Length: 362
Image 1: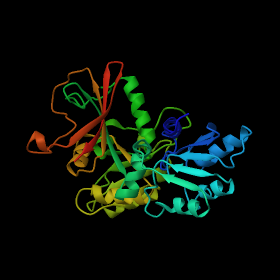
Image 2: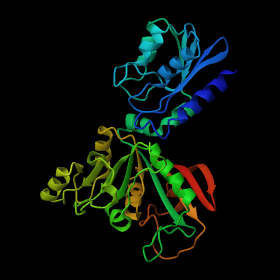
Image 3: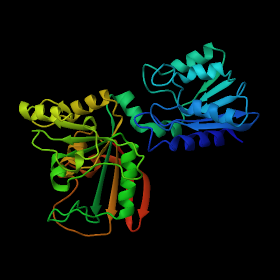
Image 4: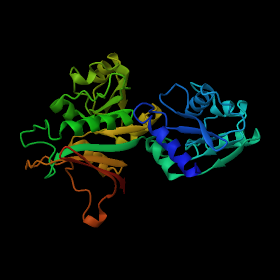
């Protein structure tokens, strides 16, 4: 088996945690001895065994001795005590001969630390910067490097670019398969954000409805004046601490007090409208790595105007609605050449609907 095939296997293992491991990064590990894979693992859930530990346990369960073997791991092993012991300790104690790392930990406090520890213990360490390993953790990387969560915009629209009929009815523009794919998107991030008008118009639950075992995300609402009562589906079956209300200086103290009394997290920013920059910094402090922004138009536009959007997914249904209900309400540029550049990364079809996904640059 070639080294490239081993790396591909490690990446595919890491991807198994895409719906469950947030806010932790996706990590895959493969143990090789005598030219053969003897153990595999991936990080499944925050607080549980990391990929390296699961791979070691897998090898031992199969009757293999990991001493003198090589472990391929997509992200630099952890080197500090958290909810689990450091993986560097396990690698040293199990007498691995070498550790091959796909990408260095983007956390400035940890970057390169495991490499030094392992080398000092006598292990041979090779650290690369593989693009496939790095791209596994766009959200985690953004929080570590930018000090804010990764922002992914998502909307569904008709072929002529409308979010709803002129009456306001938006159920359902996209089909069932597209909506299920949207739930998978939610599961990849540990927060979902909407504006207060969406809460009033759609009464969304913002939950992940794939299986009964899904981790539920933070639910964030931009509610500048704290006017909403929050008695709808948003709060059902959701712990109050998982609901974040972002308000501005226009929000009255008694309204904020009532929200806090219900157990909600309230983030107040300067200005008459919620400052997205301030909000994102506070969310990062709470451990939010990635936010799926689901609109509506004002919210989508505000993220694009502030140049805070990193990625977008658009579901396009084969319907023509007409009217003015577009996803972006204001001009973002004066000429097409100056518009945000989008590099498409995926195009899929779901029973007639098209899904376009791309990275936003500038």
